[in-house]
Length: 252
Ligand code: PEP
Ligand code: MN
Image (cartoon, rainbow, N blue to C red; front, side, top):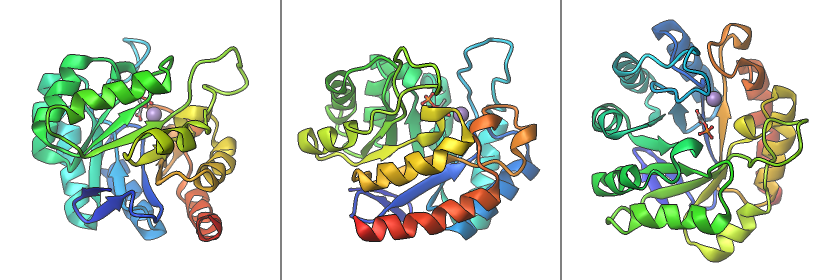
Protein backbone atom coordinates (compact mmCIF):
# COMPACT_ATOMS: atom_id res chain seq x y z
CA UNK A 1 0.00 0.00 0.00
CA UNK A 2 1.43 3.38 -0.97
CA UNK A 3 0.03 6.63 0.41
CA UNK A 4 0.37 9.79 -1.68
CA UNK A 5 -0.94 12.82 0.20
CA UNK A 6 -4.66 11.99 0.58
CA UNK A 7 -4.65 9.14 -1.96
CA UNK A 8 -3.84 5.48 -1.41
CA UNK A 9 -2.74 2.93 -4.00
CA UNK A 10 -3.02 -0.75 -3.22
CA UNK A 11 -5.66 -0.77 -0.47
CA UNK A 12 -8.10 -2.92 -2.40
CA UNK A 13 -9.97 -0.11 -4.09
CA UNK A 14 -9.23 1.30 -7.53
CA UNK A 15 -7.07 4.45 -7.66
CA UNK A 16 -7.17 6.49 -10.84
CA UNK A 17 -4.34 8.80 -11.83
CA UNK A 18 -5.31 11.09 -14.69
CA UNK A 19 -4.32 14.24 -16.51
CA UNK A 20 -2.57 15.46 -19.61
CA UNK A 21 0.54 13.90 -21.07
CA UNK A 22 2.32 17.23 -20.75
CA UNK A 23 1.64 20.39 -18.78
CA UNK A 24 1.16 22.86 -21.63
CA UNK A 25 -0.32 25.95 -20.01
CA UNK A 26 -2.03 27.12 -16.83
CA UNK A 27 -5.41 27.09 -18.53
CA UNK A 28 -4.95 23.60 -19.95
CA UNK A 29 -3.73 22.05 -16.70
CA UNK A 30 -6.34 23.65 -14.47
CA UNK A 31 -9.15 22.65 -16.84
CA UNK A 32 -7.88 19.06 -16.85
CA UNK A 33 -7.38 19.02 -13.07
CA UNK A 34 -10.89 20.16 -12.26
CA UNK A 35 -12.47 17.71 -14.67
CA UNK A 36 -10.51 14.67 -13.53
CA UNK A 37 -11.21 15.49 -9.89
CA UNK A 38 -14.95 15.81 -10.57
CA UNK A 39 -14.87 12.44 -12.30
CA UNK A 40 -13.25 10.79 -9.28
CA UNK A 41 -9.53 10.64 -10.05
CA UNK A 42 -7.35 10.68 -6.93
CA UNK A 43 -4.07 11.89 -8.41
CA UNK A 44 -3.33 14.44 -11.13
CA UNK A 45 -0.59 13.60 -13.64
CA UNK A 46 1.21 16.02 -15.96
CA UNK A 47 4.62 15.90 -17.58
CA UNK A 48 6.92 18.87 -17.04
CA UNK A 49 9.97 17.08 -18.45
CA UNK A 50 9.09 15.14 -21.57
CA UNK A 51 11.65 12.61 -22.82
CA UNK A 52 10.42 12.66 -26.43
CA UNK A 53 11.58 10.32 -29.14
CA UNK A 54 12.43 13.30 -31.37
CA UNK A 55 14.53 16.20 -30.03
CA UNK A 56 12.32 18.51 -32.12
CA UNK A 57 9.09 17.55 -30.30
CA UNK A 58 7.79 19.59 -27.34
CA UNK A 59 10.11 18.91 -24.41
CA UNK A 60 7.95 20.24 -21.56
CA UNK A 61 7.69 23.45 -19.53
CA UNK A 62 10.14 22.14 -16.92
CA UNK A 63 10.19 24.28 -13.72
CA UNK A 64 7.19 26.32 -14.84
CA UNK A 65 5.25 23.08 -15.36
CA UNK A 66 6.07 21.93 -11.83
CA UNK A 67 4.79 25.20 -10.40
CA UNK A 68 1.55 24.82 -12.35
CA UNK A 69 1.12 21.31 -10.93
CA UNK A 70 1.48 22.73 -7.41
CA UNK A 71 -1.12 25.39 -8.22
CA UNK A 72 -3.53 22.77 -9.62
CA UNK A 73 -3.06 20.71 -6.48
CA UNK A 74 -3.77 23.70 -4.26
CA UNK A 75 -6.96 24.47 -6.20
CA UNK A 76 -8.34 20.94 -6.38
CA UNK A 77 -6.80 19.13 -3.40
CA UNK A 78 -5.53 16.43 -5.76
CA UNK A 79 -2.16 14.81 -5.15
CA UNK A 80 0.21 15.18 -8.11
CA UNK A 81 2.70 13.06 -10.01
CA UNK A 82 5.25 14.03 -12.64
CA UNK A 83 8.06 12.30 -14.49
CA UNK A 84 11.67 12.94 -13.55
CA UNK A 85 14.42 12.30 -16.06
CA UNK A 86 17.62 13.05 -14.18
CA UNK A 87 18.95 14.26 -10.86
CA UNK A 88 18.26 17.95 -11.53
CA UNK A 89 14.61 17.38 -12.48
CA UNK A 90 14.18 15.10 -9.46
CA UNK A 91 15.56 17.71 -7.05
CA UNK A 92 13.13 20.30 -8.35
CA UNK A 93 10.15 17.93 -8.57
CA UNK A 94 10.61 16.94 -4.92
CA UNK A 95 9.68 20.50 -3.96
CA UNK A 96 6.52 20.75 -6.05
CA UNK A 97 4.79 17.37 -6.42
CA UNK A 98 3.64 14.53 -4.16
CA UNK A 99 4.91 11.64 -6.26
CA UNK A 100 7.50 11.19 -9.01
CA UNK A 101 7.52 8.88 -12.02
CA UNK A 102 10.42 7.09 -13.60
CA UNK A 103 9.42 6.48 -17.21
CA UNK A 104 9.88 3.48 -19.44
CA UNK A 105 12.97 5.06 -21.01
CA UNK A 106 14.68 5.37 -17.64
CA UNK A 107 13.62 2.12 -16.00
CA UNK A 108 17.22 0.94 -15.92
CA UNK A 109 18.81 4.29 -15.12
CA UNK A 110 20.20 2.79 -11.94
CA UNK A 111 21.76 6.01 -10.70
CA UNK A 112 18.41 7.78 -10.94
CA UNK A 113 16.63 4.85 -9.29
CA UNK A 114 19.00 4.97 -6.32
CA UNK A 115 18.55 8.71 -6.02
CA UNK A 116 14.74 8.32 -6.05
CA UNK A 117 15.20 5.66 -3.41
CA UNK A 118 17.15 8.02 -1.17
CA UNK A 119 14.53 10.76 -1.65
CA UNK A 120 11.86 8.67 0.09
CA UNK A 121 9.23 10.13 -2.26
CA UNK A 122 6.39 7.88 -3.54
CA UNK A 123 7.27 6.77 -7.07
CA UNK A 124 5.63 5.20 -10.11
CA UNK A 125 8.12 2.92 -11.84
CA UNK A 126 7.08 2.23 -15.40
CA UNK A 127 8.05 -0.98 -17.14
CA UNK A 128 10.72 -0.50 -19.83
CA UNK A 129 9.73 -1.17 -23.45
CA UNK A 130 11.77 -4.34 -23.58
CA UNK A 131 12.06 -5.23 -19.91
CA UNK A 132 11.17 -8.62 -18.56
CA UNK A 133 9.11 -8.67 -15.40
CA UNK A 134 12.20 -9.82 -13.53
CA UNK A 135 14.23 -6.84 -14.79
CA UNK A 136 11.40 -4.51 -13.85
CA UNK A 137 11.21 -5.92 -10.32
CA UNK A 138 14.99 -5.63 -10.00
CA UNK A 139 14.73 -1.97 -11.00
CA UNK A 140 12.17 -1.54 -8.21
CA UNK A 141 14.64 -3.23 -5.89
CA UNK A 142 17.17 -0.45 -6.59
CA UNK A 143 14.67 2.03 -5.13
CA UNK A 144 13.56 -0.15 -2.23
CA UNK A 145 17.13 -1.07 -1.29
CA UNK A 146 17.82 2.61 -0.60
CA UNK A 147 15.02 2.59 1.98
CA UNK A 148 12.07 3.78 -0.12
CA UNK A 149 9.27 1.23 -0.11
CA UNK A 150 6.73 3.59 -1.67
CA UNK A 151 7.02 2.09 -5.14
CA UNK A 152 4.06 1.59 -7.48
CA UNK A 153 4.73 -0.51 -10.58
CA UNK A 154 3.09 0.54 -13.85
CA UNK A 155 2.57 -1.77 -16.82
CA UNK A 156 2.46 0.45 -19.94
CA UNK A 157 2.87 -2.01 -22.77
CA UNK A 158 5.95 -3.62 -24.26
CA UNK A 159 7.50 -3.73 -27.72
CA UNK A 160 6.41 -6.63 -29.87
CA UNK A 161 6.09 -7.25 -33.62
CA UNK A 162 2.47 -6.03 -33.50
CA UNK A 163 1.93 -2.64 -35.11
CA UNK A 164 -1.82 -2.18 -34.67
CA UNK A 165 -1.22 -0.66 -31.24
CA UNK A 166 1.60 1.61 -30.05
CA UNK A 167 2.76 -1.11 -27.66
CA UNK A 168 1.37 -4.48 -26.61
CA UNK A 169 -0.32 -4.33 -23.22
CA UNK A 170 0.95 -7.25 -21.16
CA UNK A 171 -2.00 -7.68 -18.84
CA UNK A 172 -0.73 -10.98 -17.51
CA UNK A 173 2.00 -8.90 -15.85
CA UNK A 174 -0.60 -7.80 -13.31
CA UNK A 175 -1.28 -11.20 -11.72
CA UNK A 176 2.36 -12.27 -12.24
CA UNK A 177 3.66 -9.22 -10.36
CA UNK A 178 1.06 -9.75 -7.66
CA UNK A 179 2.38 -13.26 -7.18
CA UNK A 180 6.04 -12.17 -7.03
CA UNK A 181 5.85 -8.86 -5.19
CA UNK A 182 3.88 -7.04 -2.54
CA UNK A 183 4.13 -3.74 -4.46
CA UNK A 184 0.96 -2.23 -5.93
CA UNK A 185 0.63 -2.49 -9.70
CA UNK A 186 -1.24 -0.11 -11.95
CA UNK A 187 -1.88 -0.14 -15.70
CA UNK A 188 -1.49 2.66 -18.27
CA UNK A 189 -3.83 1.84 -21.18
CA UNK A 190 -3.05 5.20 -22.83
CA UNK A 191 0.64 4.62 -23.61
CA UNK A 192 0.00 0.89 -24.08
CA UNK A 193 -2.40 1.41 -26.96
CA UNK A 194 -1.68 4.90 -28.29
CA UNK A 195 -5.32 5.05 -29.38
CA UNK A 196 -8.13 6.66 -27.37
CA UNK A 197 -10.73 4.19 -28.67
CA UNK A 198 -8.80 1.35 -27.01
CA UNK A 199 -8.31 3.03 -23.64
CA UNK A 200 -11.69 2.11 -22.14
CA UNK A 201 -11.65 -1.60 -23.08
CA UNK A 202 -8.09 -2.02 -21.81
CA UNK A 203 -8.86 -0.05 -18.64
CA UNK A 204 -11.80 -2.35 -17.93
CA UNK A 205 -9.66 -5.40 -18.61
CA UNK A 206 -6.90 -4.11 -16.32
CA UNK A 207 -9.34 -3.69 -13.45
CA UNK A 208 -10.74 -7.17 -14.08
CA UNK A 209 -7.16 -8.53 -14.02
CA UNK A 210 -6.66 -7.11 -10.54
CA UNK A 211 -4.82 -3.82 -11.12
CA UNK A 212 -4.66 -1.52 -8.10
CA UNK A 213 -5.07 1.52 -10.28
CA UNK A 214 -4.97 3.10 -13.70
CA UNK A 215 -2.97 5.89 -15.28
CA UNK A 216 -5.02 7.62 -17.97
CA UNK A 217 -4.21 10.58 -20.18
CA UNK A 218 -6.98 13.20 -20.25
CA UNK A 219 -6.75 16.46 -22.16
CA UNK A 220 -9.38 19.23 -22.28
CA UNK A 221 -8.93 19.41 -26.07
CA UNK A 222 -7.04 16.35 -27.32
CA UNK A 223 -6.93 17.64 -30.90
CA UNK A 224 -4.79 20.55 -29.70
CA UNK A 225 -2.48 18.50 -27.45
CA UNK A 226 1.26 19.07 -27.87
CA UNK A 227 1.91 15.48 -26.89
CA UNK A 228 -0.03 12.21 -27.18
CA UNK A 229 -3.32 13.75 -28.33
CA UNK A 230 -4.48 10.62 -30.24
CA UNK A 231 -4.48 8.55 -27.05
CA UNK A 232 -5.84 11.25 -24.71
CA UNK A 233 -9.46 11.10 -23.59
CA UNK A 234 -11.56 14.25 -23.70
CA UNK A 235 -13.16 14.90 -20.27
CA UNK A 236 -16.61 13.62 -21.29
CA UNK A 237 -15.19 10.27 -22.34
CA UNK A 238 -13.22 10.10 -19.11
CA UNK A 239 -16.43 10.71 -17.14
CA UNK A 240 -18.12 7.83 -18.95
CA UNK A 241 -15.17 5.51 -18.36
CA UNK A 242 -15.08 6.30 -14.64
CA UNK A 243 -18.77 5.35 -14.39
CA UNK A 244 -18.18 2.05 -16.20
CA UNK A 245 -15.20 1.23 -14.00
CA UNK A 246 -17.35 1.38 -10.88
CA UNK A 247 -19.30 -1.60 -12.20
CA UNK A 248 -16.17 -3.54 -13.14
CA UNK A 249 -14.42 -2.80 -9.84
CA UNK A 250 -17.48 -3.91 -7.87
CA UNK A 251 -17.46 -7.25 -9.69
CA UNK A 252 -13.75 -8.07 -9.09
C1 PEP B 1 4.29 9.25 -19.59
O1 PEP B 1 3.62 8.64 -18.74
O2 PEP B 1 4.16 10.46 -19.80
C2 PEP B 1 5.27 8.53 -20.42
C3 PEP B 1 6.18 9.18 -21.16
O3 PEP B 1 5.14 7.22 -20.37
P1 PEP B 1 6.20 6.04 -20.73
O4 PEP B 1 7.43 6.32 -19.93
O5 PEP B 1 5.46 4.83 -20.26
O6 PEP B 1 6.41 6.09 -22.20
MN1 MN C 1 2.12 10.62 -22.86
